[in-house]
Each structure stands twice: as structure tokens, then as C-alpha cells.
Length: 132
Image (cartoon, rainbow, N blue to C red):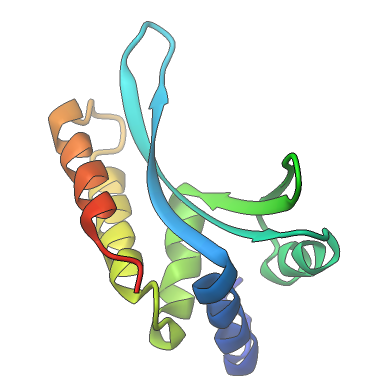
């Protein structure tokens, strides 16, 4: 992923800005607790472009939705991807910065129980950031 040239990074940033999402999702864990994680994705009606994104980035999963396809990347890989694209993001720059900070904080708590209220604060804050 680090070997992407400037033009490719700029193109991927434009695609993420226009057709993508940066979010923190809430997931239920075994035992009934909830946790949160960073998720980024790009949605398209046809799969071809997403296959190319996955090949170019070297990571991610493509899901078939009802009327479209979605490429997704989560966790530390999503953070690294956002760091590569950050200089070229326009619409989603503020969300990307917030998501990167969330993942850094989460990673610093590795093997420790992260307080649910802390994760919920990030989740709520992300929803408050406007989509320009």
C-alpha cells in the first residue's frame, strides 16, 4: 500500500471523496458487549472498478449488496490508507482525521479493555461531522 504513487493516491482520494464513506461502526461482541471499529468503503453499481481498487491497494473485501457492490477496509489498514490519501482528500478530510485519531487511540489500548463510553464518544462525534 505504501508504494502507491502520487497520482494513484490522488485518484483514490477523489474516488473516496465522491463515492466512499469513512465511519466508525458499532458491533455487538459475543457476550452482549459492544465495540466500535473504523471502516472505510467505496460503493459502485458495477464491480470492475472495485476489483481494481482492491488490486491497487492490496487489501480490502468486496461485498455484494442488493443493488451495488462495496469495497471495505477496516482497522489499522484503513488508518494507513487514510494517511496515504489525507493530503488529497477534500470532502472527507475532517472525517478521515477523526477516524485516524480514533484508530490510533484504539491501537494504543491493544490488549486492554477499551472503555465503552470512550468508544461511544468517538462514534457520536463522527456522526456530527458534516458531509460537505
